[in-house]
Length: 221
Image (tube, rainbow, N blue to C red; front, side, top):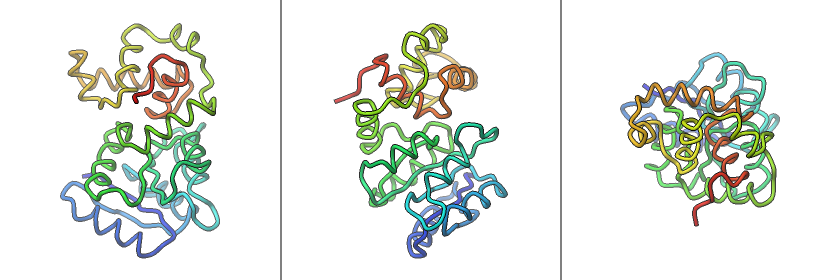
């Protein structure tokens, strides 16, 4: 069962998301929060598999809350899926830098939202949705968020780890990477656990950004 916390300052949105997700047989909404402080406290107490986090909330916003849950220095991070009514802007870049596992617009198809929650819970992020690809392109073109250069990174990574990063940047899940490389899923997870700290990143999404920014792989058209 995937345990989810929904954080949004609008009661109707919280109720709608909770109803939508709770109707799925494999998802349980264990709590709802109206602002960032409440979201952080609830997530730390309940340890959900995913926090669906609005960006713009009164008091502590979604970026600050995301950083508190899965940013640098967090020993036991809680995965965050950022939901927003806004297109690409500094809020999304801030959430990426804070360690978010993925992004989704609130007007996405309900089935896409459900799949995104499942993907983030499985540790796969949401690299294959259109918004994320546009975020990646904007970050690659305008910002340098990753601290490890391509040369340094490829020196640190083994040949197998580099293969995994390339497949990860294409949006593949752990299962897909395992099938492509003829490995066990557990082996892929072990590799990823070593890859992320080597690159100085906290999430699969940040690892993909690293690959794009450093021209290890080209962005899809």
